[in-house]
Length: 280
Image (cartoon, rainbow, N blue to C red; front, side, top):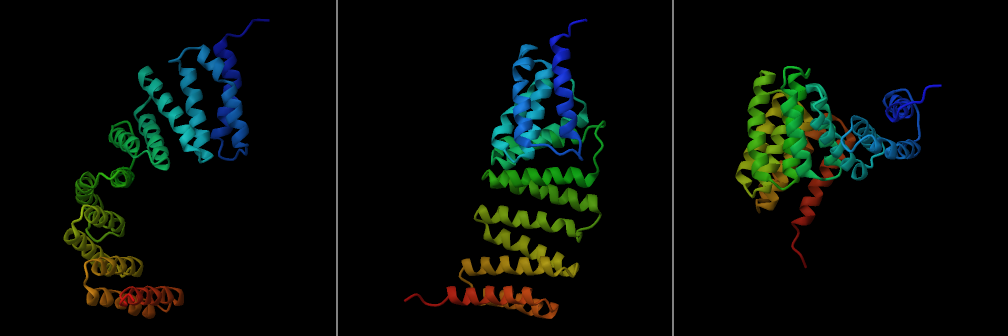
């Protein structure tokens, strides 16, 4: 009987595990799968520190940890796997987009925002490659996540500049400046400006978002924006404006006939009134 090589031994043990993980209908224990994969590490490492087998194993460990919501454990493995595969030049443009994106998402979960920014930017780069097959909205979505990561990293000026360009590109891609998909992005711009201490610019973006919600007859956007405007007015000491904005929320909620919405709007207005009571 012919003996098998270490690479063949690895494949015999690894492939069924890989197939199980990637089978959408398969059920498996995450902890048991992690243990089975960890048991393969010596064999994979024996094939070389930069071997394709080790990269495959590390990546699958990363995927399983991500499924288990254990990104702190998985992220270093994913980073090492991607580094090996990049050095081996065995990734297609689509695989590069997908793997950088997966790393970026995991880094967001781990609150490793600089790492997330780096890999989401790489993902966006490869998503624009001729060999990748992503629609315009998906590409814009990656860029929106970059803006989020920049904001969470405290890089507010970069986030603002990034999102300003993204808004222009999104309006062009959607062929409209009143597309509901712009709402979140405009809100992000308001948050960027607010964190930079530029209340005037934050107010302008909130007004733009309010106009969008009104044009779309979208009570959700309108109510949320009025709330944020009310908070901003309260923080700036304009009590009359804050009350006016929150009273508008109550009127809209009342007209909607949604009792839960009305209760929330009234409670928010009452909380504002309580906050503005003179302190004993």
